[in-house]
Length: 312
Image (cartoon, rainbow, N blue to C red; front, side):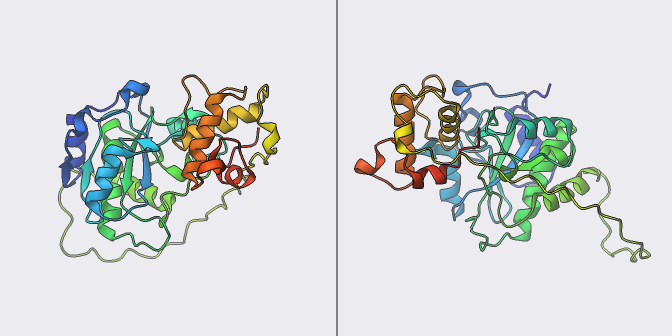
């Protein structure tokens, strides 16, 4: 069992890896532990913030927003490569994801299975780092920021004696997510793996480069199996969502609403359509930009298609 790192151990691990770390406000006591368990910890998850600017992004991740209370990660990595610690404990960054992916991370097994389910609480099991980037595929990733992501993930892996296979992207965990966008997690895990193979306390690299090695035959790379496409539940029609309806589709919808930060459940979600389901869906409609009668909590096709409910 991997006991969560204390605030002091996390801070030391990052600094030992060569990080410039900023301790933001009361990060040591900023967490969501009152909402659920934190630990055992099994991996590191990488995100992008969908925001610009260091100060505003750090505050957003520390406080959260109206649809999703903070903290939204453990550390924010800005474009200059600085890590801003914003939380110690459970954080709202991973949401519900695929339990098969979690088992692969625990076993450090590759390749990862497709993330086609949202049935497991990732906030309990993963450290999360948000990197400041708009996530539009155009916002650049400076080399110093990519190096900081590599170092942050390696620092946590080194503290637990994990390999780079314990590091995943949000897009590999939760259906419908695309972050981090702009580099591949395969390339990042390769960088992290190379760093973990180096001794951080060993001698510095020589200033003059070594002579190039003799060319070798390139390794034979077997093609990766094509993952099965994710199947989403088709819109069943607004009349489906009525008092007395009992269906696994309602449960799957509720889990996606919770994952999007729109859950309004005291207990659940469950298969029976309820007022809590309607209130939760109304919150999702408002998040999609609807208001007034258009945010009445009864699913419509446009908002349903955007929710991407996994096929049951």
